[in-house]
Length: 79
Length: 300
Image (cartoon, rainbow over all chains, first blue to last red; front, side, top):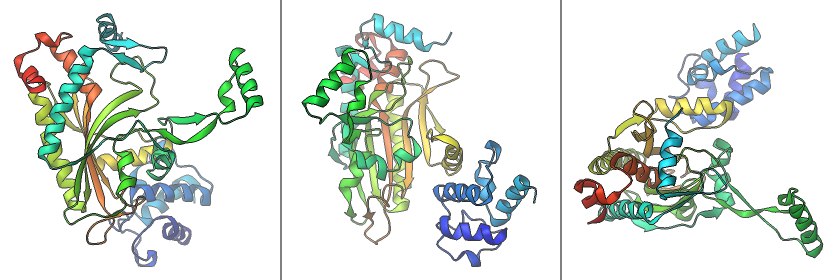
Protein backbone atom coordinates (compact mmCIF):
# COMPACT_ATOMS: atom_id res chain seq x y z
CA UNK A 1 0.00 0.00 0.00
CA UNK A 2 2.85 2.33 0.90
CA UNK A 3 4.28 1.99 -2.64
CA UNK A 4 0.94 2.81 -4.25
CA UNK A 5 0.50 5.87 -2.01
CA UNK A 6 3.98 7.12 -2.87
CA UNK A 7 3.42 6.56 -6.59
CA UNK A 8 0.26 8.66 -6.42
CA UNK A 9 2.08 11.35 -4.45
CA UNK A 10 4.85 11.59 -7.02
CA UNK A 11 2.33 11.87 -9.85
CA UNK A 12 -0.24 14.20 -8.28
CA UNK A 13 1.35 15.73 -5.18
CA UNK A 14 3.35 18.30 -7.16
CA UNK A 15 6.13 18.02 -4.60
CA UNK A 16 9.41 19.78 -5.28
CA UNK A 17 11.33 16.89 -3.66
CA UNK A 18 11.74 13.21 -4.55
CA UNK A 19 8.96 11.19 -2.93
CA UNK A 20 11.54 8.51 -2.01
CA UNK A 21 13.23 11.03 0.26
CA UNK A 22 10.03 11.73 2.21
CA UNK A 23 9.66 9.76 5.45
CA UNK A 24 6.35 8.25 6.48
CA UNK A 25 5.70 10.92 9.11
CA UNK A 26 6.99 13.95 7.22
CA UNK A 27 4.46 16.76 6.79
CA UNK A 28 3.57 16.75 3.09
CA UNK A 29 2.25 20.34 3.16
CA UNK A 30 5.53 21.55 4.62
CA UNK A 31 7.28 19.56 1.91
CA UNK A 32 5.40 21.69 -0.65
CA UNK A 33 2.09 19.96 -1.38
CA UNK A 34 -0.58 22.60 -1.96
CA UNK A 35 -4.25 22.16 -1.05
CA UNK A 36 -5.12 21.90 -4.75
CA UNK A 37 -2.54 19.15 -5.18
CA UNK A 38 -3.91 17.37 -2.09
CA UNK A 39 -7.33 17.37 -3.76
CA UNK A 40 -5.83 15.68 -6.84
CA UNK A 41 -4.06 13.18 -4.59
CA UNK A 42 -7.36 12.47 -2.83
CA UNK A 43 -9.15 11.81 -6.12
CA UNK A 44 -6.32 9.59 -7.37
CA UNK A 45 -6.35 7.60 -4.10
CA UNK A 46 -10.11 7.07 -4.47
CA UNK A 47 -9.59 5.80 -8.03
CA UNK A 48 -6.65 3.60 -7.16
CA UNK A 49 -8.17 1.96 -4.09
CA UNK A 50 -11.82 2.01 -5.18
CA UNK A 51 -12.92 3.89 -2.08
CA UNK A 52 -14.62 7.18 -1.33
CA UNK A 53 -13.47 9.34 1.55
CA UNK A 54 -16.47 10.24 3.72
CA UNK A 55 -17.26 13.89 4.58
CA UNK A 56 -15.57 13.60 7.96
CA UNK A 57 -12.28 12.60 6.32
CA UNK A 58 -12.31 15.45 3.79
CA UNK A 59 -9.84 17.46 5.80
CA UNK A 60 -6.23 18.53 5.46
CA UNK A 61 -5.16 16.22 8.27
CA UNK A 62 -6.15 13.07 6.39
CA UNK A 63 -3.47 13.75 3.77
CA UNK A 64 -0.87 15.28 6.08
CA UNK A 65 1.69 12.47 5.70
CA UNK A 66 2.20 9.10 4.05
CA UNK A 67 1.40 7.51 7.41
CA UNK A 68 -1.81 9.56 7.80
CA UNK A 69 -2.96 8.54 4.31
CA UNK A 70 -2.16 4.91 5.11
CA UNK A 71 -4.18 5.09 8.33
CA UNK A 72 -7.17 6.63 6.54
CA UNK A 73 -7.07 4.01 3.80
CA UNK A 74 -6.69 1.28 6.41
CA UNK A 75 -9.90 2.43 8.08
CA UNK A 76 -11.79 2.46 4.81
CA UNK A 77 -10.48 -0.78 3.37
CA UNK A 78 -10.14 -2.58 6.68
CA UNK A 79 -6.67 -3.67 5.57
CA UNK B 1 -39.36 35.01 9.56
CA UNK B 2 -36.00 36.40 8.51
CA UNK B 3 -35.25 40.10 8.26
CA UNK B 4 -33.99 39.87 4.66
CA UNK B 5 -37.31 40.22 2.85
CA UNK B 6 -38.39 42.99 5.24
CA UNK B 7 -35.39 45.16 4.36
CA UNK B 8 -35.98 44.33 0.72
CA UNK B 9 -39.63 45.35 1.04
CA UNK B 10 -38.54 48.70 2.52
CA UNK B 11 -36.05 49.29 -0.26
CA UNK B 12 -38.60 48.40 -2.94
CA UNK B 13 -41.37 50.45 -1.31
CA UNK B 14 -39.05 53.47 -1.19
CA UNK B 15 -38.28 52.99 -4.89
CA UNK B 16 -34.58 52.58 -4.12
CA UNK B 17 -34.41 49.05 -5.56
CA UNK B 18 -36.56 48.09 -8.53
CA UNK B 19 -37.25 44.34 -8.64
CA UNK B 20 -37.32 42.50 -11.95
CA UNK B 21 -38.59 39.09 -13.06
CA UNK B 22 -35.27 37.55 -11.93
CA UNK B 23 -34.37 37.34 -8.24
CA UNK B 24 -31.22 39.26 -7.42
CA UNK B 25 -31.46 41.46 -10.51
CA UNK B 26 -32.51 45.01 -9.62
CA UNK B 27 -32.83 48.45 -11.08
CA UNK B 28 -31.37 51.08 -8.79
CA UNK B 29 -32.64 54.60 -8.19
CA UNK B 30 -30.52 57.74 -8.16
CA UNK B 31 -30.65 57.67 -4.32
CA UNK B 32 -28.87 54.30 -4.42
CA UNK B 33 -26.49 55.21 -7.24
CA UNK B 34 -25.46 58.47 -5.52
CA UNK B 35 -24.29 56.37 -2.57
CA UNK B 36 -22.36 54.03 -4.90
CA UNK B 37 -20.80 57.05 -6.63
CA UNK B 38 -19.72 58.44 -3.26
CA UNK B 39 -18.11 55.14 -2.26
CA UNK B 40 -16.39 54.91 -5.65
CA UNK B 41 -14.97 58.41 -5.29
CA UNK B 42 -13.60 57.49 -1.87
CA UNK B 43 -12.05 54.24 -3.13
CA UNK B 44 -10.66 55.93 -6.26
CA UNK B 45 -8.95 58.55 -4.08
CA UNK B 46 -7.48 55.81 -1.87
CA UNK B 47 -6.26 53.86 -4.90
CA UNK B 48 -4.73 56.95 -6.48
CA UNK B 49 -2.82 57.85 -3.32
CA UNK B 50 -1.60 54.22 -3.19
CA UNK B 51 -0.12 54.52 -6.69
CA UNK B 52 -2.30 51.96 -8.42
CA UNK B 53 -2.67 51.75 -12.19
CA UNK B 54 -6.39 52.04 -12.76
CA UNK B 55 -8.27 49.92 -15.32
CA UNK B 56 -11.91 49.26 -16.08
CA UNK B 57 -12.97 46.01 -17.76
CA UNK B 58 -16.47 45.31 -19.10
CA UNK B 59 -18.91 42.91 -17.40
CA UNK B 60 -18.04 40.17 -19.90
CA UNK B 61 -14.63 38.61 -20.38
CA UNK B 62 -13.04 35.91 -22.56
CA UNK B 63 -14.47 32.50 -21.57
CA UNK B 64 -10.92 31.15 -21.41
CA UNK B 65 -10.36 33.20 -18.24
CA UNK B 66 -13.01 31.12 -16.45
CA UNK B 67 -11.09 27.99 -17.38
CA UNK B 68 -7.55 29.24 -16.78
CA UNK B 69 -8.29 31.00 -13.51
CA UNK B 70 -9.68 27.78 -12.06
CA UNK B 71 -13.06 29.41 -11.40
CA UNK B 72 -14.85 26.74 -13.43
CA UNK B 73 -13.19 24.09 -11.29
CA UNK B 74 -13.87 25.71 -7.92
CA UNK B 75 -17.20 27.50 -8.39
CA UNK B 76 -19.03 25.87 -11.32
CA UNK B 77 -22.37 26.66 -9.70
CA UNK B 78 -21.70 30.42 -9.82
CA UNK B 79 -20.71 30.91 -13.42
CA UNK B 80 -22.64 32.87 -16.02
CA UNK B 81 -22.04 31.63 -19.54
CA UNK B 82 -23.03 33.56 -22.67
CA UNK B 83 -24.71 31.83 -25.61
CA UNK B 84 -25.29 33.23 -29.06
CA UNK B 85 -27.21 32.35 -32.20
CA UNK B 86 -25.41 31.94 -35.51
CA UNK B 87 -27.87 29.76 -37.38
CA UNK B 88 -29.50 30.35 -40.74
CA UNK B 89 -33.07 31.21 -41.67
CA UNK B 90 -34.24 27.63 -41.24
CA UNK B 91 -32.69 27.42 -37.74
CA UNK B 92 -34.18 30.80 -36.86
CA UNK B 93 -37.63 29.55 -37.90
CA UNK B 94 -37.23 26.54 -35.59
CA UNK B 95 -35.95 28.79 -32.78
CA UNK B 96 -38.93 31.12 -33.09
CA UNK B 97 -41.36 28.18 -33.23
CA UNK B 98 -39.88 26.91 -29.99
CA UNK B 99 -39.97 30.37 -28.41
CA UNK B 100 -43.55 31.03 -29.46
CA UNK B 101 -44.79 27.67 -28.24
CA UNK B 102 -43.12 28.13 -24.87
CA UNK B 103 -40.38 25.62 -25.68
CA UNK B 104 -36.67 25.77 -24.90
CA UNK B 105 -35.36 28.11 -27.61
CA UNK B 106 -31.96 28.30 -25.95
CA UNK B 107 -31.18 24.83 -27.31
CA UNK B 108 -30.60 26.57 -30.65
CA UNK B 109 -27.75 28.63 -29.16
CA UNK B 110 -24.05 27.83 -28.76
CA UNK B 111 -21.62 28.93 -26.08
CA UNK B 112 -19.89 32.18 -27.04
CA UNK B 113 -16.23 32.92 -26.53
CA UNK B 114 -17.15 35.36 -23.76
CA UNK B 115 -18.64 34.73 -20.33
CA UNK B 116 -19.86 36.93 -17.53
CA UNK B 117 -17.16 38.08 -15.11
CA UNK B 118 -17.46 36.52 -11.62
CA UNK B 119 -14.84 38.64 -9.86
CA UNK B 120 -13.70 42.02 -11.06
CA UNK B 121 -9.96 41.33 -10.86
CA UNK B 122 -10.07 38.18 -13.04
CA UNK B 123 -9.91 39.86 -16.47
CA UNK B 124 -6.81 41.79 -15.36
CA UNK B 125 -4.42 38.86 -14.85
CA UNK B 126 -4.24 37.52 -18.42
CA UNK B 127 -3.33 41.01 -19.62
CA UNK B 128 -0.29 41.11 -17.32
CA UNK B 129 1.64 38.14 -18.77
CA UNK B 130 5.33 38.68 -18.43
CA UNK B 131 7.74 40.02 -15.87
CA UNK B 132 6.79 42.32 -13.02
CA UNK B 133 9.33 44.93 -11.95
CA UNK B 134 11.07 44.44 -8.63
CA UNK B 135 8.59 45.29 -5.89
CA UNK B 136 5.66 44.28 -8.07
CA UNK B 137 2.81 46.45 -9.30
CA UNK B 138 -0.46 47.67 -7.83
CA UNK B 139 -3.68 48.03 -9.81
CA UNK B 140 -7.27 48.92 -9.17
CA UNK B 141 -10.23 47.63 -11.15
CA UNK B 142 -13.94 48.24 -10.69
CA UNK B 143 -17.05 46.96 -12.40
CA UNK B 144 -19.91 44.52 -12.65
CA UNK B 145 -19.78 40.88 -11.56
CA UNK B 146 -22.22 38.03 -12.02
CA UNK B 147 -22.69 35.06 -9.71
CA UNK B 148 -25.55 32.63 -10.15
CA UNK B 149 -27.07 32.97 -6.68
CA UNK B 150 -30.70 33.99 -7.18
CA UNK B 151 -32.06 35.11 -3.82
CA UNK B 152 -34.60 37.43 -2.24
CA UNK B 153 -31.82 38.72 0.04
CA UNK B 154 -30.91 42.15 -1.37
CA UNK B 155 -27.36 41.56 -0.09
CA UNK B 156 -27.09 38.54 -2.39
CA UNK B 157 -27.55 40.02 -5.85
CA UNK B 158 -26.71 38.04 -8.97
CA UNK B 159 -25.39 41.16 -10.68
CA UNK B 160 -23.35 43.43 -8.43
CA UNK B 161 -20.28 45.64 -8.36
CA UNK B 162 -16.84 45.31 -6.82
CA UNK B 163 -13.87 47.65 -6.64
CA UNK B 164 -10.63 45.74 -6.18
CA UNK B 165 -7.16 46.87 -5.23
CA UNK B 166 -4.72 44.31 -6.65
CA UNK B 167 -1.03 43.60 -6.03
CA UNK B 168 1.05 41.34 -8.28
CA UNK B 169 4.69 40.54 -7.54
CA UNK B 170 6.82 38.99 -4.81
CA UNK B 171 5.15 36.58 -2.38
CA UNK B 172 5.96 38.42 0.85
CA UNK B 173 4.93 41.79 -0.52
CA UNK B 174 1.64 40.25 -1.67
CA UNK B 175 0.74 39.21 1.87
CA UNK B 176 1.97 42.57 3.26
CA UNK B 177 -0.19 44.50 0.80
CA UNK B 178 -3.17 42.33 1.59
CA UNK B 179 -2.74 42.96 5.33
CA UNK B 180 -2.19 46.70 4.84
CA UNK B 181 -5.28 47.09 2.65
CA UNK B 182 -7.32 45.07 5.12
CA UNK B 183 -6.60 47.64 7.85
CA UNK B 184 -7.04 50.57 5.46
CA UNK B 185 -10.33 49.16 4.16
CA UNK B 186 -11.65 48.61 7.68
CA UNK B 187 -10.74 52.21 8.60
CA UNK B 188 -12.54 53.58 5.51
CA UNK B 189 -15.69 51.58 6.26
CA UNK B 190 -15.54 52.50 9.93
CA UNK B 191 -15.27 56.18 8.96
CA UNK B 192 -18.60 55.82 7.17
CA UNK B 193 -20.24 54.98 10.49
CA UNK B 194 -20.47 51.24 9.89
CA UNK B 195 -19.91 48.80 12.76
CA UNK B 196 -17.30 46.54 11.15
CA UNK B 197 -15.38 43.48 12.27
CA UNK B 198 -12.57 41.57 10.57
CA UNK B 199 -13.05 37.78 10.43
CA UNK B 200 -11.21 34.83 8.89
CA UNK B 201 -13.28 33.47 6.02
CA UNK B 202 -13.32 31.04 3.13
CA UNK B 203 -14.67 31.01 -0.40
CA UNK B 204 -17.67 28.76 -1.18
CA UNK B 205 -15.67 26.07 -3.02
CA UNK B 206 -17.99 23.63 -4.74
CA UNK B 207 -18.52 20.00 -3.93
CA UNK B 208 -16.65 17.38 -1.89
CA UNK B 209 -13.23 18.75 -2.69
CA UNK B 210 -14.53 22.17 -1.68
CA UNK B 211 -14.39 21.15 1.98
CA UNK B 212 -10.65 20.52 1.85
CA UNK B 213 -9.99 23.72 -0.10
CA UNK B 214 -12.13 25.80 2.28
CA UNK B 215 -10.42 24.34 5.34
CA UNK B 216 -7.00 25.00 3.82
CA UNK B 217 -7.90 28.56 2.96
CA UNK B 218 -9.04 29.25 6.54
CA UNK B 219 -6.10 27.54 8.24
CA UNK B 220 -3.63 29.52 6.14
CA UNK B 221 -5.64 32.76 6.69
CA UNK B 222 -5.67 33.41 2.98
CA UNK B 223 -8.99 35.20 3.19
CA UNK B 224 -10.40 37.79 5.60
CA UNK B 225 -13.77 39.45 5.34
CA UNK B 226 -14.94 42.74 6.79
CA UNK B 227 -18.43 42.09 8.08
CA UNK B 228 -21.20 44.34 9.35
CA UNK B 229 -24.81 43.70 10.38
CA UNK B 230 -27.28 44.18 7.55
CA UNK B 231 -29.91 41.61 8.53
CA UNK B 232 -28.78 40.81 12.06
CA UNK B 233 -25.87 41.24 14.43
CA UNK B 234 -25.74 37.45 14.88
CA UNK B 235 -25.21 36.90 11.16
CA UNK B 236 -23.31 39.92 9.84
CA UNK B 237 -22.73 40.29 6.10
CA UNK B 238 -19.35 40.47 4.39
CA UNK B 239 -19.06 43.85 2.66
CA UNK B 240 -15.37 43.63 1.73
CA UNK B 241 -12.73 40.93 1.53
CA UNK B 242 -8.95 40.68 1.57
CA UNK B 243 -7.49 37.74 -0.31
CA UNK B 244 -4.08 36.10 -0.71
CA UNK B 245 -4.03 34.19 -3.97
CA UNK B 246 -0.50 32.77 -3.60
CA UNK B 247 0.50 31.81 -7.17
CA UNK B 248 -3.03 30.90 -8.19
CA UNK B 249 -3.14 33.56 -10.94
CA UNK B 250 0.58 34.05 -11.50
CA UNK B 251 1.06 30.45 -12.58
CA UNK B 252 -1.65 29.94 -15.23
CA UNK B 253 -1.24 33.45 -16.65
CA UNK B 254 2.54 33.30 -16.88
CA UNK B 255 3.34 36.24 -14.62
CA UNK B 256 6.80 36.21 -13.02
CA UNK B 257 8.67 38.41 -10.58
CA UNK B 258 11.85 40.30 -11.44
CA UNK B 259 13.74 37.34 -9.92
CA UNK B 260 12.05 34.91 -12.27
CA UNK B 261 9.78 33.30 -9.66
CA UNK B 262 6.09 32.72 -10.33
CA UNK B 263 4.36 35.92 -9.19
CA UNK B 264 2.03 35.97 -6.22
CA UNK B 265 -0.99 38.23 -6.04
CA UNK B 266 -3.52 39.52 -3.57
CA UNK B 267 -6.56 41.72 -3.73
CA UNK B 268 -8.79 43.77 -1.48
CA UNK B 269 -12.36 44.02 -2.73
CA UNK B 270 -14.94 46.60 -1.73
CA UNK B 271 -18.44 45.18 -2.28
CA UNK B 272 -19.99 48.37 -3.60
CA UNK B 273 -23.59 47.15 -3.52
CA UNK B 274 -23.29 45.57 -0.08
CA UNK B 275 -21.59 48.66 1.36
CA UNK B 276 -24.43 50.77 -0.07
CA UNK B 277 -27.03 48.46 1.49
CA UNK B 278 -25.15 48.52 4.82
CA UNK B 279 -25.16 52.33 4.78
CA UNK B 280 -28.89 52.47 3.95
CA UNK B 281 -29.59 49.94 6.71
CA UNK B 282 -27.43 51.72 9.28
CA UNK B 283 -28.22 55.36 8.55
CA UNK B 284 -31.67 55.09 6.98
CA UNK B 285 -33.19 55.29 3.52
CA UNK B 286 -32.80 59.08 3.19
CA UNK B 287 -29.12 59.97 2.71
CA UNK B 288 -30.02 63.64 3.12
CA UNK B 289 -30.78 62.84 6.77
CA UNK B 290 -27.59 60.84 7.43
CA UNK B 291 -25.07 62.00 10.04
CA UNK B 292 -22.57 64.52 8.73
CA UNK B 293 -19.60 62.14 9.09
CA UNK B 294 -20.59 59.66 6.36
CA UNK B 295 -22.15 62.41 4.23
CA UNK B 296 -18.94 64.44 4.30
CA UNK B 297 -16.81 61.38 3.53
CA UNK B 298 -18.93 60.38 0.56
CA UNK B 299 -20.00 63.64 -1.02
CA UNK B 300 -17.87 66.59 -0.07
